[in-house]
Amino acid sequence: MPAVELESKVAHVIAKQLTAPSFIGPLFPDATAAEIADAEAKIDAIGDRSTSWLELIKRIDLNAGELNICLDQKRIATLFERDSNEQLQDLLTIKAPSRSVNAEWKPN
Image (cartoon, rainbow, N blue to C red; front, side, top):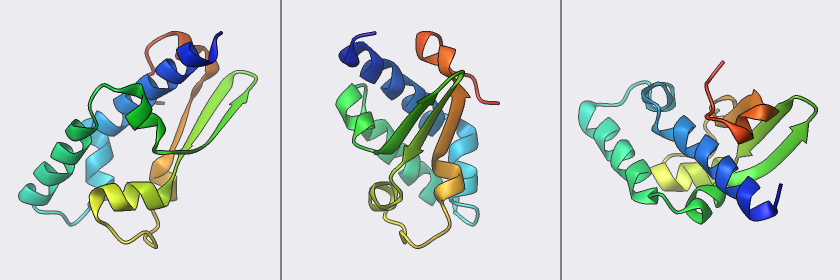
């Protein structure tokens, strides 16, 4: 698969994860409705440009049968104006079957 196509598909996986309603809640467990709306607006501002989503990546591991995308904790903290020392990393690891780069990603 050409790199540009792979990047586009990885960006799609990231976008699906970050725009899922189940992402914001654990990231902001004590947030008010206004803070959640602000976080959603920041995600929406990233838009549909693949390069914007890819800027959030720290590392990608493509193993036999599994795709692991680790988002950069500092970049996510900056995006949401949060303390980068918070224990966010578990929320920032996206695991999907490697075949999902060829199909729509569905969380486990």
